[in-house]
Image: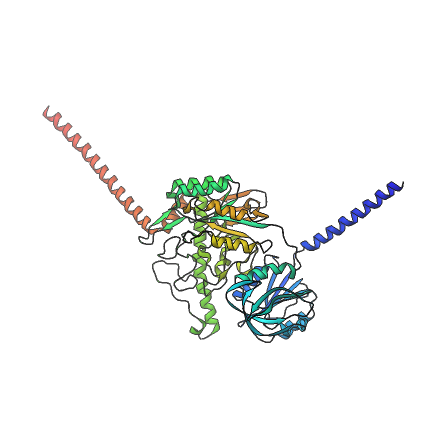
Length: 569
């Protein structure tokens, strides 16, 4: 009887422990809702705001951005409030009041945190320059705010300047302070590492990883593409193929379609059957007269601005500034007009890319912007065609070189709902004495950030010269897991093509493309070919008419000779 009672008590205790464990796991798994309040000089989100939000997006897809200078917002329903002071100014009364009454976690970046009641115990003074962070030297000296936290706070990241230590990221309970709003490489890693504690999130055990075969175009060597792709497939490694459907010769203007390189198309289809996933890497990877692979396609690099003309035979106009107009309304009308030009251009490119690949039996699963350049308007357009994007993010609409990538998979606000699979380790550079040197450094850094993505690319024209070494480097990371896109949800679509996948339900493809559609599209895209076809048709008509005339003449001649013979006879 005592034995039965003991077993009964043990079972109850075990069940209670399981319930407690389950509740703890549930609490840890709850996705936090975040309100990000920002102060910028013009009241609009800038590159610093977008990058901070993109990093936070690796922890939740529920982030709302609000300008502190904008209309009053209720924040009581959020789990976390992030305050970003990107310039020095007076915090609006409604923001101070809302934060003072907020009960959840509070993160403050940069300026003006001293005006918030919860940070009264922090001593935030002027700016100081640091030369290293957490023992790692910075490429350039970094300006940060001197922030001395309370004595019982924890310093998670620390900079050094002139022999003294400066807290960079500090935390006390539900309060956290980060002494900057701009993030270089080392600062990005420090923030990404610390966010697990700042947001009270459990650190994952694994690193998602991917390898991308880059810049496969109609002039790529089919044998080298097959060699590199099969090397990965034979080892059971899921991989991606970034394909450019049309090659443009910058000297002659000639366009070569992927369909003309039949051996390459067959190789790509075999690799697709072996698990290779197609990424649409633009349509031509060029803009105007640039050569494929060199041009930016979705950004005017010469004028450093978004696309402003659909015509390739005219010089694009320089975008006007607000100073060129007599009223804000006129400027907004002008901006909308130029946005429409960009919309039409990008939509046509995406349709051509997706439909050209699909017609060849190559089914894209995601998008990669050539050279990672695209405006925020461009990302919004693109999100209607693709649900996933690979690479880095352009964070500015006025300078293409302002780009970066967070270290986590997420849905940054600037991408308008697309899931970003960030490129974090770069590529094999054969120009270096050690072509994998920079990748090795990046891999080492990423191991310090739990859950960070190990994402890089490799050019197939290198053959197997460095690929085995690269794979060995990536697989040396403990708990690295290859991203298998056959298990992911995604869509790629135009008005004539729909490629979708939901979990393990398999890929579903719908296409209403016809041979006539493809022929007309090719003619529209390449007027020179159209002119040749017209000339060819005219020549054929004249040849046919001439043949009919000659045949008719011969018949008449034979008839006449026959009649003459009868007359003579």
